[in-house]
Length: 336
Image 1: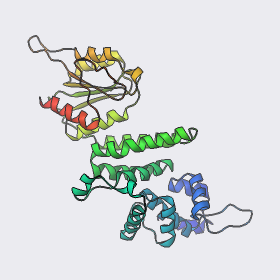
Image 2: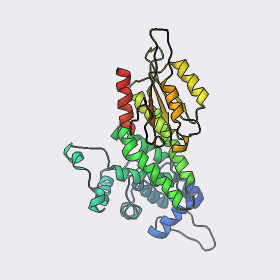
Image 3: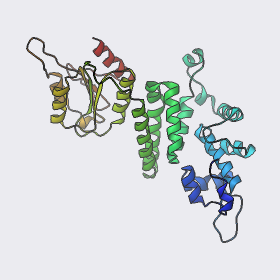
Image 4: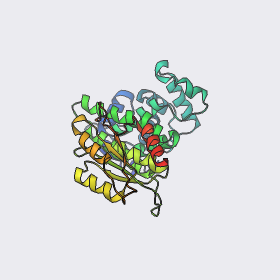
């Protein structure tokens, strides 16, 4: 591991220094030390315990295994049995065997994939395991591990499936964590959300600026600041090379109408997270907007997305459910 050779020369590292180096909360390190013996081996009376090179190597392996979704207790056992350490995120064949064994030890109801996955041949990782590994990395505030796992999940599953099967469940799980623990882990949810947003932006294809295709306008309704679902939709449309104009959070009604008039979009997507923030009159007004010369007037197709748009449906407006249906609907509208 890079930098561990300095530990003996400096007399070992403090728990705080190790926490900063690995991106693991000090409380997590103390818990792993108390529960599993993953901690400083040497201890001098009246002095803080120091991590030497061997201690850091053991912790490196522990982190690599938990990043891969292995439960902490099993990861500690495997790390202690094989102290030779690969770089984090670069597990070898023997490690893969240990991970596979740990997963097989889980209850059958939790590990069995749907039959259609079994019959369709090799698949990306188990979404449940990936959710747990990603959530653990977020709770440890391990930014590098979060980024690495997000890229692997999106590449392995494809953006739409990764969003539906892994990213959304993980975001909800981390949200429930801070809600159930007296708001102790709000920083973990913020870190995870920021890195998910960054990963989605990296997937956003750059469309040809000279294209004459009518764009798709994406915006949250006034008062709504939940942009991640729209960012996922923007990235999924961008992957298909479809032109997008993303306006993000809480776009004022007047600004939304101005954006529609200025861009002449083929479709307008309005996101509402909660029922109070949704605005049926605004959606209807956008759907009735027209532009262009007489005899060739055009108007947008409006899609209302998000849990805030409840029944009854807005007349003349589409209501796709989920990211895949929204992408397919918009693609069909643009093709038409």
